[in-house]
Length: 594
Image (cartoon, rainbow, N blue to C red):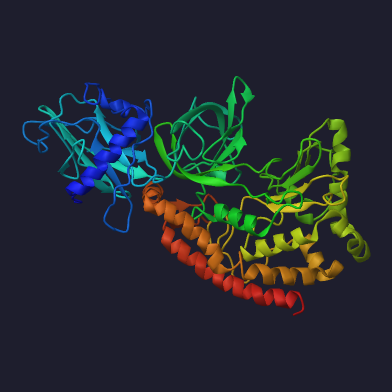
């Protein structure tokens, strides 16, 4: 165990004194840390008290190659003695730990112990946490990993390891397991079951260890909201549902920034349950943002941002999620007074509708827009604007003409007019991105078409933006392996490459040369995986996810299954991507006549 000399202790005491003078108070728990409060094994996983920022100090620790947490007592315990195993009754609920004024989240309960999870921040150096206990009277022994605790002698605990907090008094004893995470923790408390087709009132509590950097006065903030399950195929995975939630109070939505993301009312919690890496969609959003910017706003790409969190639904730990922004009008830079957004999806339970759909420019179908639904044409939604139903037909008109040109237009018509409807640079980048990342579900569904203003000739053409990219990088959405030598395309891109209007093949080839040595190289793509995984693995969040969901079985007939192993999957992604991009180099040369 780490030992501290007098010099280091002097630094701790001086720095703590400075912090005390600046803050004018110690953590609130110091005054009542050892009063009797009954415990209940069925108590909520977190009951947040008045939370103060954990006191941190710049203590120099030996180079161990891993981050550590320093733990002290909030109030000294005179005569702190060794753990008493004689003449005492073992009780797993011996006490509830409180760190610097905040209770943790009960990760799990076994026959022997409760496991408590605490978020910590390294923004100001190694965190020092001040421990108090609720639920035990007159403790005689408090130790961490068999080292007795005091107010002035911190005990170092590796960030990703579970620490044993041993507590006893004259009558009872117990071992409490302490765990730490650098990820934010989100807890939703729904008023009943969470459904796919309707919203349930709930609260959303966000414990943000880096709250100060995100402009908040406190680490813990709770919001009124409504929540529902999301997705179509992903909603079938009962083990780990994805969710939508909207901040709402008294029937009205309200905007709020969460975890440093944009101000908004509508959010998602993506489970990525069918993705063996839990990262494909998040990584590919980042890659798309690297290679593309909207013509009308160079700060936006249409890609959403997201933050990894650990989620509790009620008292139950639900593992790793991405709390993310939803793709919407704001994400696409569209003003309220102009612009248009159309998106495609797979219509479950409507195979005939999908096979004859205009989505993916397959056909015009037998129905024109507004015949069945003013805002839905087969499996294409007019998302914005939604004015009166009487205006819907006119709003559909130019997109219908766009699809008709691709499906029915002669070669002469196609060459003369296609770039009146679509931006060639955007199309080249979308096709190259989709094929480099092997995004198999984004050429008929999961496509967003956006246009800023039909009155401005600079911005009156549709651009394409991808979303929902879990079926990618060598795996189909079922999790089974995809083929290395396979292009993804649709009739729009087939015609662009075959008929070559305005020398589109040259644009495709030159853009590929640019991207291939940058964002679409194997190393550049894997850099995103490495960055996210480093964040998850340093605090053991990856191991908690594996412990919660060690295996997966698809709902699809033929039941694909796998054991969750992050490092093995990253190795597979790198190997697959390297082979696939090498093959794609040759294929693009062939298609472009090089």
